[in-house]
Length: 123
View 1 (cartoon, one colour):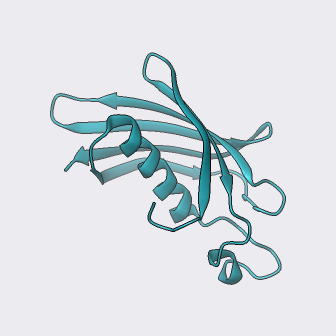
View 2 (cartoon, rainbow, N blue to C red):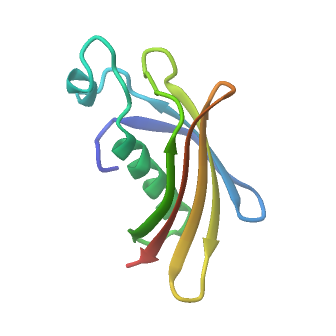
């Protein structure tokens, strides 16, 4: 975990085919929220991207590095004081060229907060 104690994984499982589902809880008291933003905390998009990378890495069980991101849509602000529990759906496809393709949708309650498509390379 790049940011110590930033989030906790409640569950992470392969559901069907190439689909994984994770339930995480963002630590609303983490130091990152003291600067982003005091009095109105917002989970930084780069932190969400890092969580997706870490979950993908756990699923494929090898270190990975992002090669490209073709689609990143932040659709709702994630305020950890209001919506700390998130559901992440990851469709993970491993290719023969040692790349890993991921399509992610992140939710809180019934709200879509983030959609991301990216390609990682295995290290």
